[in-house]
Length: 304
Image 1: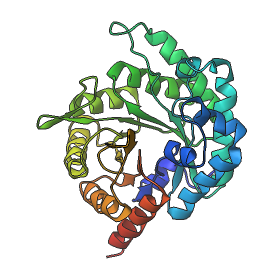
Image 2: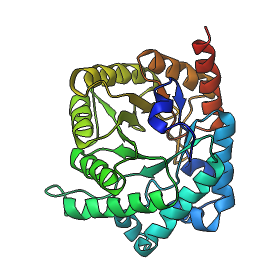
Image 3: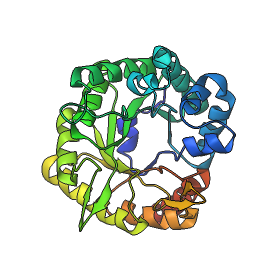
Image 4: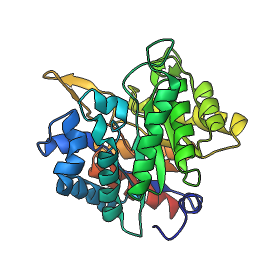
């Protein structure tokens, strides 16, 4: 385990998370969908190499390759019964790469279905699926959890509560994915920033954030300002974190692409940092080069 407790280390200032995993796996020839989670079992060397490349780039923590590895999502690929094995292996790979000097966050993502009354999923079943995943991640050696890319308030609440129930002593990061809605920001399920901050804080998250989404790079500073303001006003000033995409997704030859170059991404993240967000990583389209650019720019700032 890392020598300084995770929360204590974060209290010391700038803390860098990693960037995208799925796109880098696909670059290495791993098939999308179920192939991405099965890589933890079948291509551990490739997953490890990506983890190490982020640590070399300056990440303080790496995130397990388990975004879609809950029983409900895995069930769509006939992999529900391998849920524990997939999550434990993913955590072990990350733990091995991180060693004692870096941190590992167990990644928990959406189920891919809607909860009642919009859909058919029951809150109790969702929570049970997340508890199973969280326990498997703990058994592989994670230092905390990062709940990402959520859009529904009920679902993120269930995930945070599950993580707390599975391992109450481990810190929980929780983030939602925002799009622009007029002059405002909302998730695809209509959750605004104030509601997101309030729901995540009340459910027990230690760090509140945003990741993914379809914002243009220039909007991230504004979103960061809103998050920090609401955290101060209604969430005991809990630390905020940000993991934006490498710019707004665009379609190129039928494929989604992200075009924000590492230096431009770093400049955007400097604005986010100056808005009061000191925990920073990247989501879709970001690479070790993006994290390296952020590390070099922000660490330079701190020494001035």
